[in-house]
Length: 230
Length: 110
Image (cartoon, rainbow over all chains, first blue to last red; front, side, top):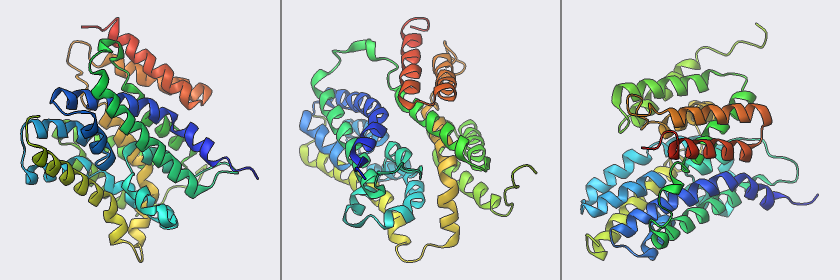
């Protein structure tokens, strides 16, 4: 059978390409404003590879933050990534020598593309994970470097384009909803996140939200899903 | 540059190490046998986490502000309807994003 892995991974990654180029450029522009040249953006996107943290990094570097503060901020901002590892634990176990890279590159967007199990015939699972991870990483690096060159040339005409990322997550949410037999995890995720957002506010809702989701999912385990048609 | 190159490097490496540490942590801790409870979480988390990411993307909407977050809320609706209708990921993303850009830059422009 013809191997369609790379082409399939590339098509799957297109929405992330749009999102990462735009968000990466946004980061590059901010970093450039602080006097850092293009290769700093490249190094940061290569080594850190975490969108929201890199935006924050610009502030931390501008303010001359200490290492402890920076480490704590990184921990808090990226703590949600623990979830992704737990989800991909079994599937990435068999990935062989690319496994460390797959784990390193497990961002929100990459997770959203690898967490859905079903792949069509002719697409190798391991290869799909690898190419999606690599393509996304490249988009992010390219976007952030471009940002340091173009600066604010594009001006306001790109305002609102970063919505592509939101759209991607909404679509994956819908797809998961349609394939899931049990909708309770999705409802728990939605309900607990919103409640946490209302209580703790936009800057600190993630960690209480994650704790709440985990507890609710563990509690849910005690109540098996009803069978279809009951 | 607001701080020296060495300071910049130290902050960048700190962020890189902590981020990688978080990503590798579950794989280190559960490298031999994964407890049943963790395997269970792995199966139910994706659905819950995707909802959390949607909320995360929309967390800064100011519902009481000048446009009440309407551009994004309408665009999320457009994405959902397009996707239910055609089930074409790229079409849904393009449609929703263009809708959001047009709304923000025209009707809801500040």
